[in-house]
Length: 233
Image 1 (cartoon, rainbow, N blue to C red):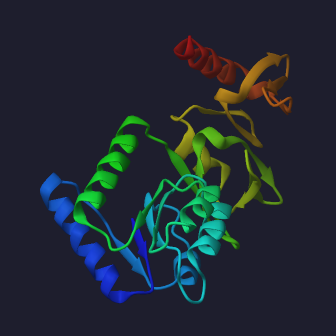
Image 2 (cartoon, one colour):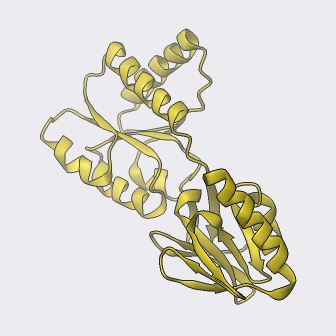
């Protein structure tokens, strides 16, 4: 998790309360601290699970920071910190988990952490990190429709945007092959959740998109799809 606040004394105070929470609950927490939104977002760490984000900061305020974060990461939980209640409604446009008014009391922090961890345990959300020249992006597997080779790189088709990845198809297949993805063609790795049907050497996604199936991979792919659909019934 991350704490982003330009008040060093508050950052220390919140860090100490999180350490207390970790000791009382036996939860292992890795905490990174940032004094400004620009430091948090450049470079951005897409493996973050939770961000405590101050709204009122100097160089890049919390709302601009949240907007930048959402361009790279639609899954991380954000809890806004503010001294003014009127800012809370603005924060929700960036899918804020909640907001906390300063000064922060431990009982409120504990309640927020309990709710956050309960959600994480109840609704695991596996993801893949896609890195390129524009930065590192966390993409939930449920949002990744398929991956195709593209100019010696990979093009990852997600619900929000298409992202270039410099990993190889073999690396992606190794990382996602046991998570509901299958290779239907030398140039395509598809999320089986999105497959609507198969006709000869072509598959159709629920989005209406069509992808080729190569003859050498057809038998194995159909077996994987059958197993997946069997698990879904």
